[in-house]
Length: 257
Image (cartoon, rainbow, N blue to C red; front, side, top):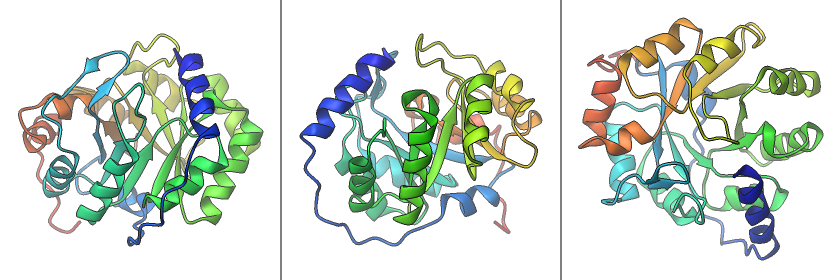
């Protein structure tokens, strides 16, 4: 599946037209996750569909969802912009960014500098870079280019081999451990527990995918995760607020956050 998605991305990049620059205030994802509103940072995802689950939320209003996430104490928002496989759109990110005051990450399969320029123009504060999608040397170039343009990066890994490959090339500020295997699309929260043992000490990392319950969050917290990226369980909840309350076991937002 991943190979198919990447081939589609390459075709999209060939015909990519850059939009006009959107004027928005940059907000640091790194800073938001260093001092989260709860015991774990929450990167809450605006996600309509996925290849593995199909349509997740038919009643889909990105701006309302983003504002609800912020009101419920999410530390940052992730917006899917892939159209073909996730029914996302870059305009969703722009509209969410214009409606909230917390950081907004662009979640897509970013493999080319043109997509980084596009991310800047649509108002993203940060982007996702996935180790399994491009050679590490190229990923390092994109990481540096993103930072030069004012974008922060969440660098995603899935295996011990990817961790070793990544840290032999450079040390990212923030990494994400994807509990989903991008080749099979199966998820296992134990992947975060396993990976935490080989992530260099002191590295800020998130657990991503397959997180549905308070117990899931406690597991990754014990493993040392700084925060979590959660989409599906929040999108399937009757409301984003109820989804977040359920996920955190009713934990309130810190008053001194």
